[in-house]
Image (cartoon, rainbow, N blue to C red; front, side, top):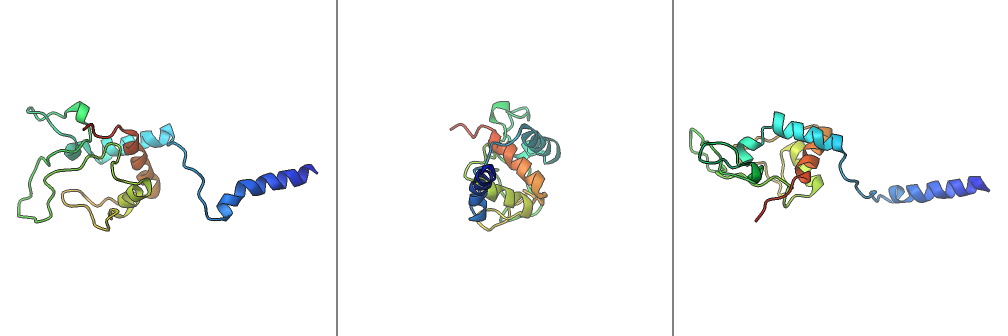
Length: 143
């Protein structure tokens, strides 16, 4: 009799997976967020373009990753050049899976690549998930 109960319990746990349903997502682990912070701050240097600066050229700490004017211009005219960067703290307007796809493929949820000077990153899945988890852990822009 205990074997039948065990089989029934396992079947109930696996039923959503067998029907193509996803388990509810859990909050990102501290290690995943820490990896994302390292990639955003130390590798991607996202602050350079996505954080506004004061009159001395220093980052405005309480506006971190809230979007800013791009601090440089192209040498030749580029019609798709982005003069302003979007806020990425909290990833406003992005679903987690779309953000991960963008970081892995360089294609946004609207089917377009990023506008220069934003590079089309090609992160592997674990790193893309870490970056998305970190950015989503940040407070979104204060309006």
